[in-house]
Image 1 (cartoon, rainbow, N blue to C red):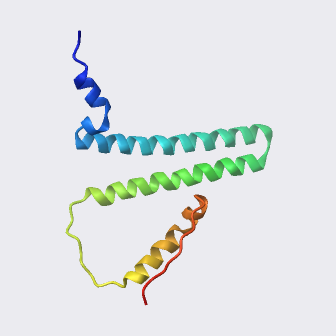
Image 2: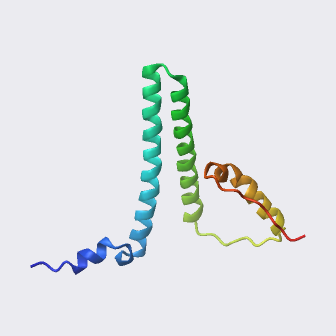
Length: 121
């Protein structure tokens, strides 16, 4: 009888080496993005077959959103893959928080999340 404890540990993320867990997480994100592109492409194909521009537009919005997601993922990977010293600068934290909320407002609305800022004056 084969010892399955090694294989069981490998199937649990906590039993994986750190690099393998990161790779699995990254693969999962990429898979989700590709599924979104595939689903949007299907809607575009169906809309073109049926000459239904609303379905084509809906499919394109899905493809476009997922193109943006893959672009952001790649840019994040490039940013975090470089060894660099952080550049410390003085900043207004309230302004930074307001900028982040402004940038994320559309994404939050898509997820039906309300963002608001209550900063110190």
